[in-house]
Every structure is written in structure tokens, then in C-alpha cells.
Length: 530
Ligand SMILES: Nc1ncnc2c1ncn2[C@@H]1O[C@H](COP(=O)(O)OP(=O)(O)O)[C@@H](O)[C@H]1O
Ligand SMILES: O=C(CO)[C@H](O)[C@H](O)COP(=O)(O)O
Image (tube, rainbow, N blue to C red; front, side, top):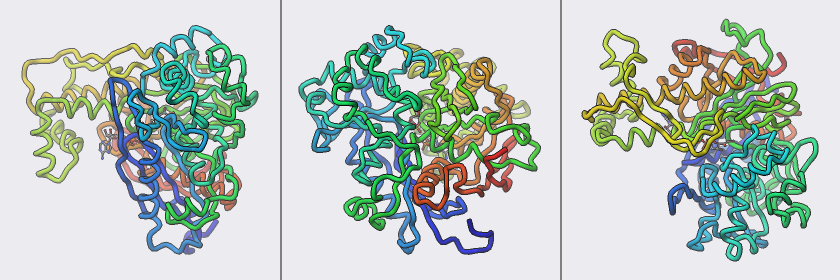
């Protein structure tokens, strides 16, 4: 570790594949983000609740953004790369070519996205088995996990996909394979989405009971029989082919990956908050809840021992922070819901025109519009007679009911910009109440949470942050590095390079801002051992 005034000599690349875009960052050994690039990725919805992507399109976007962030940097100083991604299912044949996951036979679309709800009947049958692995996903398996999607492929696309498939990857593991040629899976993805146990490995009886005994027969070679902790170095590092694609030197360290929410958790949960009078200052790291808010929101709480929270995923051992158990609450659409509500409103074209004229995002415009119409009363009071139930894509936690739908009560005939702004506010509030329900469920089961650490696209929205602080009654810490998920991915690369001994010791310095009732940017130092 260098002193404060020395020139950093080592760099790490973090690549984050979200739902809507791929981002990359160049991060120095102090954890400071030096360059950032992003690129949208394609998404198809061939029918309602079927969501697909292309692994080739995503890899191409990874290459574009990585080349951008390392431009002008001496490649000898780049020591490692880490990937994180959404927990989507990538399907390849035995020669590692994409296979179609759709009835149209379009092999370009070889990813069933995390938010795809096609496997409803399959997940119902899986839950009816009451198999003991279900205890480790909050008691009820989500349709967004991989087992029901695999079963759907076997039942619906047996000839065109299932029989030809050689490799089923979680997207983060696909990326590390693409970079290294190593098919080892990350403990994070297998434990959180595939029912693997960090302590006991695969449970044959589960796969046999749900009708996927063929995965057991070949010793799990299609879904992973070599498992590594996140941040472990893979094979001989970056292959010459991948190095050319990414614009990086061959042989640099490539880390076993993380799911995107887990990379965000890793990027923020260890921030040292000393000197800011926060409750968590004198408390263990287990008093913190990392909330990663993008298209979805994920609520990551860690504990020393396993805690079983009904309707909240986990407990997962070592899936985010080595040695800690993880519970993961979630809301399937949060950013996605706000976009849906705002873009679908009759006043959206007017909003867009006004925001563009002011060179603002629609959300910045809406926030200032709410300030204008609230007059003397607190902004929260604008919604006393308008309420939203936010489960437009089912409830992930704590109700764990995919059949739930969204609701709005208190609608009037007017559809002007004021109405749009107030509907937007009510949606933000509903999402924040969803977080509160999750926190309450986690606390009832044994967690003791005092502080929220937010990151992801929605944490750039001050109203969203403020409502989370107001409605949970907890202070919210924001990282100075807004792109904290990328810091988490870069931590993996730093760990794999051998420059740091563990993910906990990587980047001991990070600058954060604290939010109580208002946003204040302050310098903080990151520390794990409390
Ligand atoms: N500057 C911003 N202000 C307000 N909201 C934002 C901003 N940037 C992104 N968002 C919200 O964050 C969501 C996307 O977050 P992001 O972390 O980029 O998602 P993902 O990782 O799922 O691709 C969008 O749905 C949008 O609602
Ligand atoms: O299930 C998840 C993490 O376990 C996420 O919801 C999923 O990966 C999508 O993430 P994002 O909202 O950032 O696109």
C-alpha cells in the first residue's frame, strides 16, 4: 500500500454488467476510480415476462468499455481485472457456441435474464417438493433463480437447446470463462442462484427430485464442478485472444466473479465511518445493510452465524464477504418501476421536453418540480391521498410471492405534470416502504441493522435516498465513488493479482459521503475490522 503522496503504480479494471448497460472503471490501488465508461446492451422481450439477452453482445460491450478506460495507461501497470454481472442464465453448446433460449430458434438470444418469469409452473413444482435446500433461499425458491429456468429449458426446448447444451453459466461466470478459458464457477453465483452449499457442495437429491437428474449424471460438468471463492485467480490469467478483445496485456490476473449486487455490497459495506456520529460507528459490520439499487434493489445483510429469514434469500455462507453469512432481500423492479411509471404517464413528453431544455435528467426535473409544488409543507405530504403498491413484477422479499401485482389508489382525472410528479413521489415512497418491510423482517429474524449503505443508479437520485432515510428512520451512507459496484469488481481484480491478500484488505481507503436527513459529502476511511 502506498502512502498518500506517492504516485499509484498499480491499476485494476472492474467490469460491471447491469441490466441496461455495461460499465468499466480503472481503479488505482487506493481504491480511487480514475476512468469510467459505459455502453448500453441489447435486450429482447419476445413475449410478456420472457426477457433475453445475447452473450456475444455483452462481451462486445465489455470490450468497448474496457478499451476506453485503459486508454493512455501503461499496460505494465494494469495488474488484474474483475467482473460482476446480473445473475442471468447463459447457455452454450458443447463447443461453447450460443444456443437459443427461445421458440424462434434465435441463437443470438442465448441468455434468459434474471427478471424473466417464464418458469412459473416449474418453480411452483420445485417449491412443492419442500426440499431442504429451499431453507437456504428464504423457504421459497424464486422464479428468478436458475433451477426453474433449467427445468423450463428441458421441458420446453428439449431438442433445440437442452439436448445440445454443454454449458450453463451464470453471467458473471460466463465472463470469467470468456476472459480465461477456465470454466470454474464462483462460489457467489452457485450458492446464491443454483442451490450449491459452500459447506456440503451439490445436493444430488434436489436435482433428482425436480427432474434434472441428467445434471448429476455427468458430475455437474454442465453447471460447474470446480468452485472458487470470489477474487480467486483463474488459470493463467487473461488469454491472448481475450487480451486482444479487451485491449489489455495477456496473462494479467482475472478473478472469480461476483453477482452485481454482491459486488456493490463488497464495494460499500466496509466503509470506515469514524467521526461522523453514526450509530454503526461503534458497532460491528453486521449492523450495516448494503442496498444496491439499479433496475432492482438488493438488500445485503451479513452475520457471523446463519440467520434464516422467511422470504429473504440465504443464509449463504461466504457468498459476498468471506467468512460471513449473507441474507439478500430484494425488490425485483425499483429503477425499472420508476422508469415504467414515469415514461408511461400522459405528461411524459412534456416532462422530457422541459428536462431537455434545462439539460437535466427527467428525475432531476421531477425532484425540482416537487419542490415547487410542495410550498410550505414537507414533500412527503404531497401523497396523503395517493398510494402505490410497488409489486408490479411480483414480490421478491419478504412476501416471496411472484403472483402479486402493482396497485395505485387515489387517481384523479387530471394527467398534468403535477400529477406525474406526485405519482413518481408515491412510487419512490412505496419502494422505500418495501425496503422498510425487508429490514423489519431481517430484524425480526435476528439481524440488528442500524445504517443503510446505498449504491447503484438510484442512489444518484437524492429524493430516493432521502425517502429511504425518512421511511426506515436510518441514516444512509453514500460512497464518494458513485460507481461503487465497479469498485467491488476492481477489488476482485486486485485480490486476484496477489497485491492484496484478501478482498477485505483490498483498497483500505475509500471516500464516502453520509446522508442523515440531508446529503453531506465527507471524507471517510474504509476499514473492515471493527
Ligand atoms: N442520475 C440519475 N438520477 C436518477 N435516477 C437514476 C439516475 N441514473 C440512473 N437512475 C435510475 O437507476 C436505474 C438504473 O440503475 P443502474 O444501476 O444503472 O441499473 P442496472 O445496473 O440495472 O443496469 C434506472 O432505472 C433509473 O431509474
Ligand atoms: O438478483 C439480483 C442479485 O442477486 C439482481 O436483482 C440482479 O442481478 C439484477 O441486478 P440489477 O438490478 O443491478 O440490474
